Amino acid sequence: MANVYQILPDLEADEMAYVDMLVAPMTDEQAMQFAMMYRARRKEPMMILILTLVGFLGIAGIERFVLGQIGMGILYLLTGGLCFIGIIIDLVNYKKLASEYNQKQAYEVAMIMQRMGGVSYAG
Image (cartoon, rainbow, N blue to C red):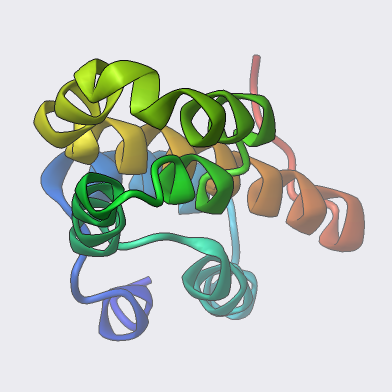
């Protein structure tokens, strides 16, 4: 399991705890496969911050499109980021937006791994 963090060295503490929980029932090979799939799907908080800052240049909502929130992205695009208020809120909460997206992706990858390799999760 130690090799997982060589593939994912830039995880935040809360994200690392969540990944630990998901990887615990996996074999080393499954954990490595999980890490590679998760790495391809996760978004860096700094990228979300940069995309949010682009909203001040007139292209509001790009961060929402990247996070898979198409409806909010269209709303931000058409309303100028809800008159810049939504953009300011996203600037404050960019780490939370990235963390929520990444946890969702980690869960989805874990469920894919469960279907593929018989990993079982309690609960």
